[in-house]
Image 1: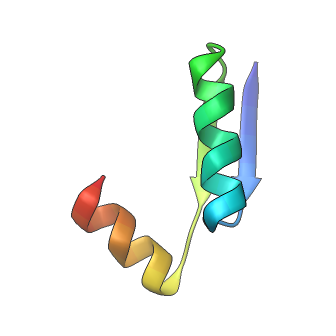
Image 2 (image 1 turned 180 degrees about the vertical axis):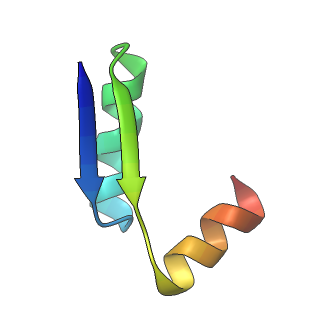
Length: 42
């Protein structure tokens, strides 16, 4: 299963993490400061 999450805030990233732990392929759409933080820290 593939899931896309729009929004990389605290809840979106938490949900993405939980889904990924369950073996689901997850893509997250981010912008602005959240995108910069993800690029810097992974």
